[in-house]
Image 1 (cartoon, rainbow, N blue to C red):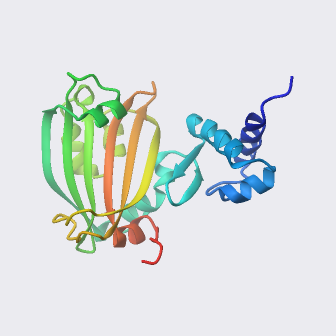
Image 2 (cartoon, rainbow, N blue to C red):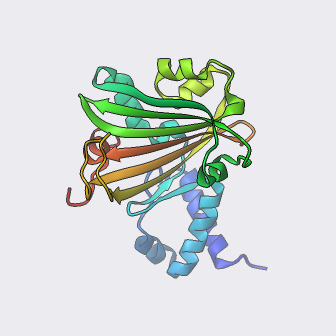
Length: 233
């Protein structure tokens, strides 16, 4: 018995990725439909299967990318921060313990309604300009008393977690261009300015989510840190 068409397409895409034929961004949906001679419905079902496996990341308004770990997906950010660290500054705005996260955060971190988390807000400056407004949630159970100190020292969240003994097996990234619906005092951006909303979820070796990091990145920050240009910007 032959496999469903969407499964065959998913297998072919998977093979292309594993054989490093596609290593970063995949061809457009239109080009893939033409290449495999299938409908958009079939292709989208195949792509969804691969998204569920973590093999593909769909980024709204940008395209489809090969799913990789955090250091590969946001490698541009890490390179700029590690090699041009004199141009990067973090400012701690707020840190709170025993915070009860909202429903969305609980869902992403797989928390119960009674579970609490450490909550951190930070501003990232690039060459003196605010470019990234970060919100971070870490389930309280993962804090051994040294986490805040490590975050202050390492600045990047993933290395800080690993320094307190939490090995990260993978991360998932969600990225969406947006337009501000109100003025942002922290980022010094007016209503109507383009920004990039980026969510990262870090998982330990058991596949449990251990941190949720939200970035709201300015247009200039997107160019300097992520090398992402907004259309017509």
